Length: 298
Length: 275
Picture (spheres, rainbow over the protein chains, first blue to last red):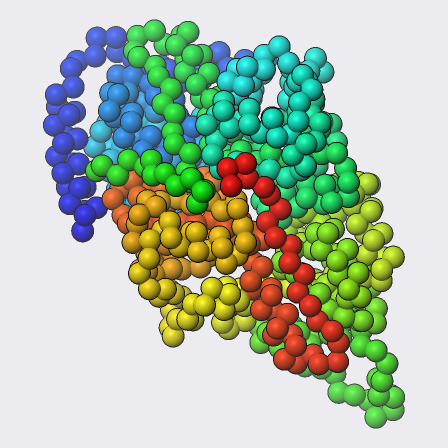
């Protein structure tokens, strides 16, 4: 099997890389970085969420920090290529929100991915809840606002709402395509709908809070929602003649520039090692525009 | 559930059939009765309403209800919910203007909405899979759940599906040039562990409806990144369900002959600027 053969080579290469690693003079560990994050997030660190070390160790010496939207296999390869062994990921590594692994113990891909992490001395930290809880503003929201160039557009009463110069739904959609490189976004609403007030709920957004959000603006922008909840509601709203629209960007593209901001934030208090945001690919293509971007080199 | 024995002292029912009577008949015909928990239920309307016709649809959207009413079909059999959550939970929507409008439309037109979801999937074979196979001209597998569709490529298959299912917003994960011959279906909601199991089976490709981006979508990306020759197509919920519900309308006609029966297409709700 191709995977098995690669895996054996991976073990050997990984071992060699670890032996060759130079002694780290600054002595920075994963735990030290986490401790600094905890004192700067602006809110009390809480238990019970999904933020945790998914793989690797708190004691591991840090050669560099990679921030990523989702710790896909591709993202891990990129971190290794950049010699960044501490991966801070907003979304899961093992394919569920909680990174549940109880049912995956015999899963070949789980074993391969975990072996890759171990062989390359990586530590992966799931940084979801606290990055959203960052004060004074959700870290993802801030990074996405920055990417969209909307810093001066934020509503005084609600930091999810942006008051834009009057435009149309179609023009706004094109703005997202251009800024985010989004080729698989999907839209509900009339293309010529006049738009000035946009409410953003980056990432996943269900019927609640999505339904009340749609009351507050012309357009709601989200990452993803189930087709039979918020999406269906938006469709019915449009059928009923309400001047509303919903833009569904895809989860990754709707949040990932929040992790670009995360890298900038980390740089202000982790001066010893390189810190870098590594963008991941958008997972999909549309049949009108086929592309293949996944790195299959093993 | 066995029908109660008719009392010799009760007159035989000769009036128009009620929604409840039709629903009981439909559920019985699926052969999937007696399951435990189910989300199949009457989600709107009075189940004792006399049925004038049956509209079968993928999702009971407002537009679909309007078209069913215009066609004089007041029993709506739907795969996906009409009130924007899988259980049609009314928590939070009861004071909502759109909810009131939709509920009142159902009342004014004396409609009944029945969610036929779990029983249609537990029918043997799965009603959605059989409907999709019929629409695409694929042969049902003799055993197992893998469709042998003949050698093609991922891109050619995606374009063929787009043509046959009428969509523009399908999303594909994988190498467009990947040879594809074996397909597994995870129509509707492609849940995490069942979809991971299908991806680890003999199929080259999993044909799904909706799937969370941080679950099976990430999994198939990682499979490909680790060297496996796999792919996934996300049709979107409605396009993945619609052929199965068109087939459901045809299936109803085989045992309900006294009422008009039609399929109400919903289509994908989205538009895509790139297509």
